[in-house]
Each structure stands twice: as structure tokens, then as C-alpha cells.
Length: 332
Image 1 (cartoon, rainbow, N blue to C red):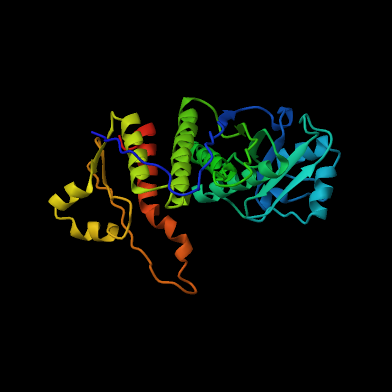
Image 2 (cartoon, rainbow, N blue to C red):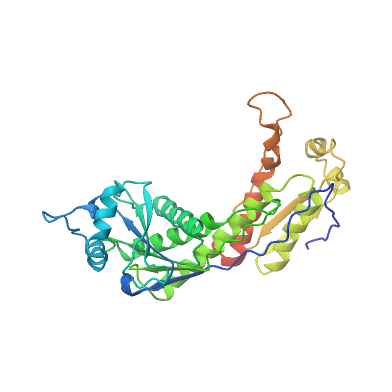
């Protein structure tokens, strides 16, 4: 059974209580030029940027957009020297589209091709950066060339783009004097299909992204906020919330002594905060979960002692994974 351990923030550091905004992820099959929203983000490869002898795009998506804009898209991209290389991105304010922002178009470079989940996750992060800069409420993402993708690749691509966008839009500013609330409310993905299977993939991306953000915020919290008791409270909360698959057993210092956990207690002996040992169990899985680390107590150049708050990053990752398991039951 999960135990409740009283804890309090030490010192003056008080994190703001921020409720993460809900971003609606949806897959749609509509013509991108008919979409109404803030930013239409088009993922393009270098091949998609090829033009014919009349300096017109050969790619059907870019050709249609450029036609609606009277060739202005091609002209501006040439001036911007945008070639579709990986890592390139540009946002253009062009008149003529249905967008309520008077045609805000984002072009995201995919390089020669983008086939890995990591590559598409990176493109999702580029979409998030454009949305932040424009303070956009809604974004639509379309690949200029998605025809050659298999059904499985389309599912993976949509999930990766969604994950990258959600993770990219998040900023942990709980400890900042001025809170910046992300404006993005919805992400529509075009051209990668629709249906229950894709909706399930997007839900999976949402659950895992939420768990990653949770882990990031644990690792970002200073030691006077994320005390051992506070970490116990977070672990217990997860176990309680998903008690159909998770359970937590919290060992106190006395219980650790009975189990002769001398090395563990030795590390904690220098702290004024009492130690706890968290045993989190995922019931359907027989696979062990382990996280460990060590303290760098040296000082001087290169030692990064100020970053030692992230030494519990292994625990943060485990708790984040546990949250994802509880929400999605991934290993079943």
C-alpha cells in the first residue's frame, strides 16, 4: 500500500501551481488550403522544393499553395534561401489563404528524407517553436509528400509529430517571477489518415508526453522543494491514481536499517531530511526497473555542482515511465 508522508517546502522557494494547458490532437483528411487557423506548417524535403522550367513547384501541395498566392510563396522562399534542408524552418505572413491570421505559413525542412520517429519528433519541436513565436492558438501540420508512407509509417509519423509539438511547447517556468502560459490549444495533422487506430496513437503520444513533462519537472525542481518526502508523495500519488496496475511500498529509515541497507543510508546520512526508499511495482510486468546514480561532491571548473539537483533524474524518469504505464498500460 502507498503510504502518505508529510512534507513541506524548505526555505523561500515556492513553485507556482501551474495547470498544464490541454492541447487537442486530431488527425483530419481535409484540403490544407481549406483549413482555418493560425499556422499551416508544411513539412518539406529537398526534393519537394524542386521547380520546373517555369520556376513552378512540382510538388502538388506546394504548387497549390503557391497558385493561391499568385507565385508569392516561391518568390519569398527563394529570397529566404529555403531549400528544405533538415533543421531549416521559416514562417511567412502571406495574404490569400483562408487562415484567420491572413495566411501564416510555416515551412519545416526535412532534408533528403525524414523516416525515423526521432526526425519527425524534431519537426514537431520546430512546429512548437513557430507556434510559440507567433503566439498561435491553433496549428495544422501537413507533409508535402506523404503518399509513399505505409500505414504503419503514417501512424508512427503522426505520433512523433504530435509528441514533438507537445514537448516542444512546454516550458517549465514554475520558479520564474513571470509565468508564460503557452497559447497553443490544438494541433491538426493532415494527410496521414484518420480512424480509431490513429486516434489511439495520438492518445498514446499525449500520455507519454505528459509523463515525460512530469519527469522533467521533477528533475528541474531544486532539492529544497523536491525533498525525499515530496518525492514519496509523488510516487504514492501515481500508485494511488493507477492502483489497478501500480503499487508503492515506502520504506522509512528504520525499515531500511532492518534490511541492512547500510550503503543507501550512508548516502542519506549527510542530509537533514529523513530518507525514504520507494519500491514501485508494476503488476502486469515481470521486468525489473532500476535507477541509480552518484553524487559529485567536487568543486571547481567542469564539476557542475550546481546541476546536482538533476542527480535524481533516474528516479524522475522511472516515475515518469510509471505514469505513462499507468495511463496507457503499455506492456499489456
